[in-house]
Length: 114
Length: 114
Image (cartoon, rainbow over the protein chains, first blue to last red):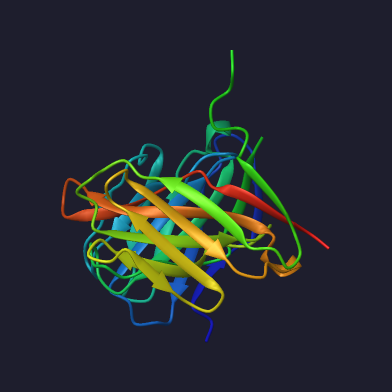
């Protein structure tokens, strides 16, 4: 089983460019999440989708937008990339939002903004 | 001044020894906890979880202990192997604006020496 798949794995952008990070899960999970991970810091929640058709802001949503395309796919968009958005981005999924079940992560997208 | 969060705590052990990794959590109302392992260049991998109505839970070579009195969580790895070298971090489920969500610690870098 693939679990959570993220594309691309690496990307370099110039300031002001836009791009979309893709995520898909094959575990039939209802909830999906986008995090960023910066050196020496814990994962920080950008946006989440508790269920298909809903999205909500996390703790660091500024500069990002998301789309829950269907139950499997949840994309993250940077409309105008800034150097402060240089980070590793992880997508995760879980059975239900707020449940006592673990989140399962993809292997990340490493994004550099020049 | 000191840069907060840039340096992970580290633990270095000899192959075959037992490892203990500690985590302090913040909210006495948290009811669910998870340990993740993150290898270099990979996403976080679920190891073991525990609910607040338990003090101890065992998996294959791993044990999680929960001390609610002092809000402390530990991960014990028996007979540590070189493949256990990674960053380990805990997560707790805390109340959020809508429901509850996982919040993640910064992690501990475990190095296993052959």
